[in-house]
Image (cartoon, rainbow, N blue to C red; front, side):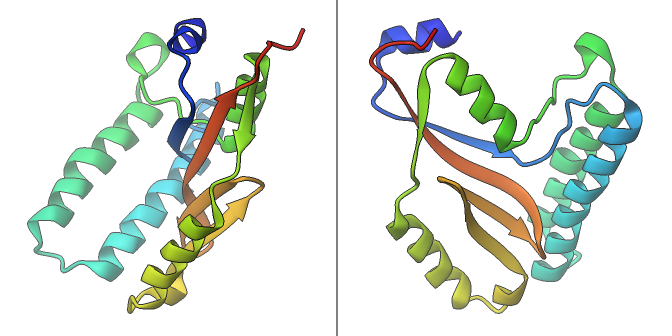
Length: 156
């Protein structure tokens, strides 16, 4: 797939991924990672939305329920959710001659401006992790946004 993407010659490739290791081979590690990640989402929803809101119910039942079941119950080919942390993506993309490029300072400044105006500002996490933007809730990283470009030649 990476070879096909390279032939398209994108100027930049943006990756938005869950910041958790849901690809661990053993159940124990996946359980702990899922507990923290999904717990962060549930806590955020409980803080920011009313219990009876349709959007909250949809996220809890559709997205989080399916995620929990797939990560914790499914095995082998049945498990389709295999999130990995940014450090794994960095190693993977380096193998294909990709460089991480910085998420511009203006994006971080804008995100912080929006958050500061929110009544939940004290609970939001927006920070740089090397060149990527980390987004979370109450010091629990939930997502990262990273940008990548291909080098001229693939390293050996």
